[in-house]
Length: 296
Image (cartoon, rainbow, N blue to C red; front, side):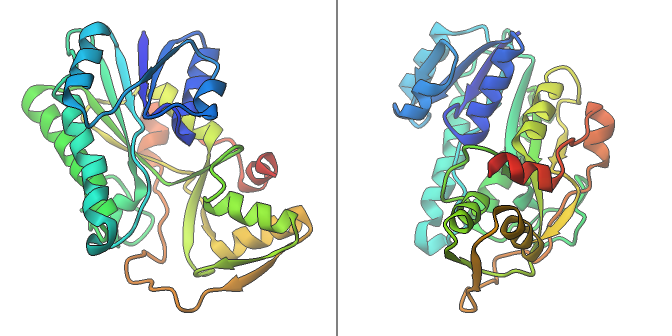
């Protein structure tokens, strides 16, 4: 096995790289620009690569033609409306994937694993399963869904070995400080007031260790052409999340933002994990309390 992780400096990408390299898997990563995070990842093969630059991507795969497994962990979460930043969100997600696929050497490739989003289910009622019709509600969701459909089309029409994960809310140690759980934890540890947009939202949180374990399982298990949910399957309200963190840290005070526009947000979104657990012979092992303690 020879593994390439695209977006290896991101939260999921770098944790996956640490996991696979510790298992003895020959692992390479790409990153967009140098950073202390990139330097800290304990693997040898690190390549700076702009996925929007067709010539650079083509040259990269000409020089590195024998990857057996590729994980696409690229792109940022931005639920802005189309007339705000939506067009750049679409470009970032969709065009970079198409540019990449057009340059990949297919001779050795066994699986192309795309990390999508649970948000692709849009406004569906939960628990959401892989067999539901998707209802995109933001440019970000549209972008992720477009990538999923593109990869499914390639699998059906040309046998491209894609496997798609729809990831719900990943969290864990060393996550970016502007994400929800680190933001709440840091505020509580400083005994500060923090703002939450809607405490009644119900979400599905999956610890990074469980997430990376599932991806590793998919290297040898799971069906190409398939979509798999990747969450805990355990619905948690934001109010419950905040209460847990306040108790565990012993500080902090919540302020609710009553002016937030919630029209583009599904009030209840969590995963049906039946297919993933069955096909990958995997189940999440980290409950929310222990996961939060690992972050704290």
